[in-house]
Image (cartoon, rainbow, N blue to C red; front, side, top):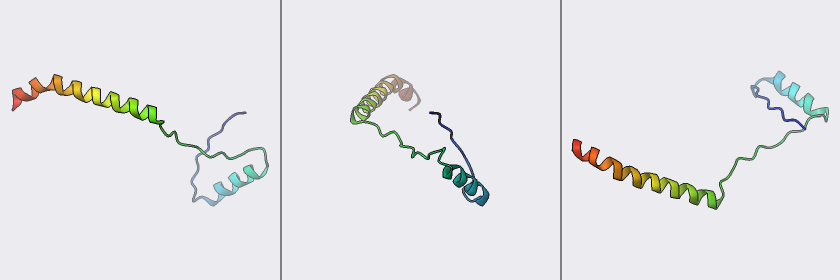
Length: 69
């Protein structure tokens, strides 16, 4: 099975009719796109990475910031 993605102007009546005709043939089906919701483990890993990056940046940037204060 292949996937085809279509973009069209939803206010264009002709485009809506053509799409409806394609779907009415039964040869094509419309699928809902599910957005990826991060798992609790992924959220925790992201928080740890963020905190580590912030901690590292504070340590490396403090002498530079102090020089200009």
